[in-house]
Image 1 (tube, rainbow, N blue to C red):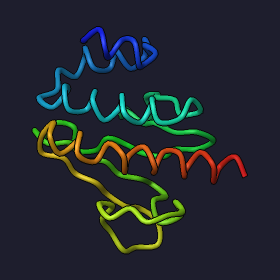
Image 2: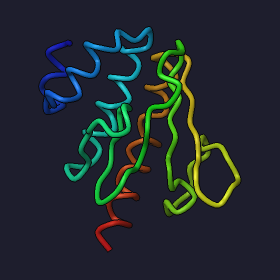
Image 3: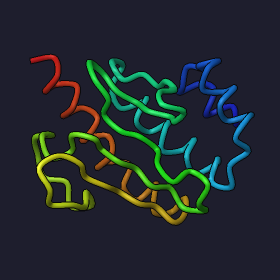
Image 4: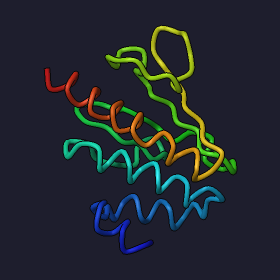
Length: 127
């Protein structure tokens, strides 16, 4: 964990234990996405639910899915309800939307979009 990481993201012992137990091939990428989302809005928190890493506020915003793969796969459980235009959210069903990343450059390139998604979710849930 870099010093920058520890300065920007509050440590969650439950999440750290999950990472330690999983030994994931994409941990560095997952941690970067998590860092962006947690830094986006102070209302966002991370937690383990159903054996997976999730982030949310007043409900689940996003789940890391297919975590054993080398890329990062995000499922925004109620992504269709998030107000705004987010060009990299994939899916057309009534609920879930997905976003995938293959490398750190792709994550960093979408930092602004991830931040806007997190803020829009928090504003929506705050009413």
